[in-house]
Length: 451
Image (cartoon, rainbow, N blue to C red; front, side, top):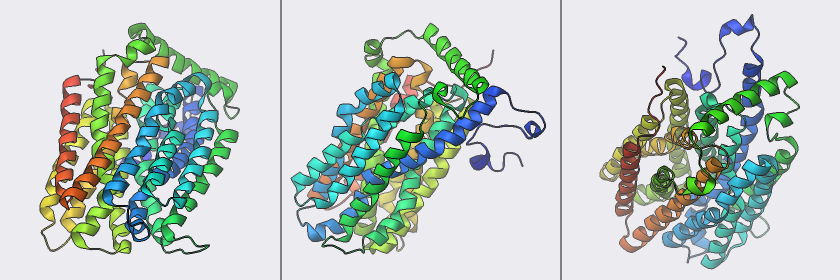
């Protein structure tokens, strides 16, 4: 019975029932408070960030009615340009969070990306769309790796994959939460603006508001947290410093050497391949359903909610299981293996009379392409610390996210040239195969053995 609800019980550290009678230690009190104080705000911020970067997948279904030049090739290229801008400031952003703290940088990111996201509503030409998407990427750069670095300032190794899973589930949660709202907004017409324009404006506003809240409420480190007692701050900081000292003693790498480390470079290539498959598929999944089954917008948005629902459950389970078993490698590999098989089978299902089999394949593919992340992002901290870890995580995320530019541009281009998404989907399967080979051969993150 105790294991019957792992998704609910194990996403936060386990505090036994006996603690009702026996008080928690200062360290455990600090760990629990950090989860409940920090993760909800970070989660909401990332939900809004992900909506702002991905709502083009729904808005594009009617943009072409007003802007005939906006083909799948144009949308794919423009959506991908987001990650070029993202790439340019990703490593500097990660280093800023490590050196100066997350509060100011994350607040700046959210306010500027909210403004740029809303400006997408006024684009009239492909080149304007390209410019706005590029600037949106510049605005958001550093958010995701900055939060990963921020978590190393707050969560010991034993809690980190679960903390990361709370962050990563914001991706599928954003899709689930936003799809029907976006569907309703698509029907708005006011002040001379069409529904797709209101989508960008509506979702840009919460980012600005949350940026102000982050500035006022986020604590950079335990020492800055007035909501922890002195005893709790000391216990948590001592635990984090102890772990850092142990890692530094065995992994003395400068930032320069870390960025040239073969393991870092291979993780970067692996992430590039995984992201190209994940975000290429994610951007065009509604369009694929529309193309294969001629569905209306309302039906598409209902069906598009199913893959992220399974993805959310997968992320929570992998984060829980990876921490519980103290294993990262296979927890990152197996989900992507399942995704590869499901996405490869998806084109074979479109000849059936119903879209049920296609949706099942898409659900498994989406789940695996999200679920591997808590285990994957725990790998760099196994051999890097401090500035070396911050710069390397920024490198992995920034270069890796260029895979989205590659995957989204490629899928849009291949559909425009061939009139079919099938070739592009199989190309994305090839990218997943490269990820699997790299992580398997790298050998990082095997189960820790107790001495």
